[in-house]
Length: 163
Image (tube, rainbow, N blue to C red; front, side, top):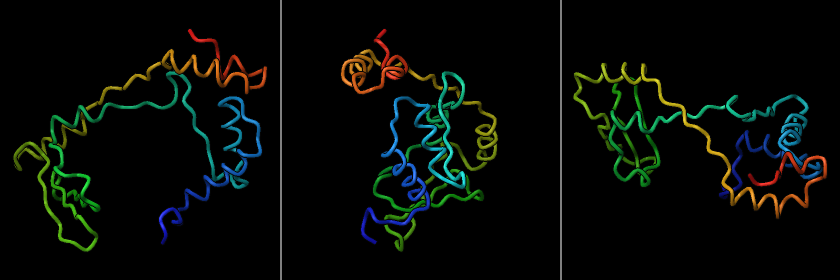
């Protein structure tokens, strides 16, 4: 297929959202949520939004896993990866689909300690990353450049005066 013309189920659902979004006046996040909900007659599209400390939580998994695993050298040149539960910490990678697999040991410990490490990873509680407030420069941009295009009832919600 020509790049950009693939048939992916999620793309069709996203297309429904785009079609309705173009016809709708959207002034705040609640309006976007409403567009997503109304875009699919069968309720296929669902909106989830972040609301302060409620909602999504992002975990610092990278720093936790760096203690157990090494980085894969030349990661970007590989196209296919194979992981198995029989060999945790071992990754097989292919540069092309029909090419030979190259095997890499990413676990930093010996094979005898592998099961202990895997249990330790499962028991690890990763720290929650805090979301950062919007930068002052971005707040000023929204206030001065975007606010004039927002309807009066929503200006203080979408583009409040910078703090």
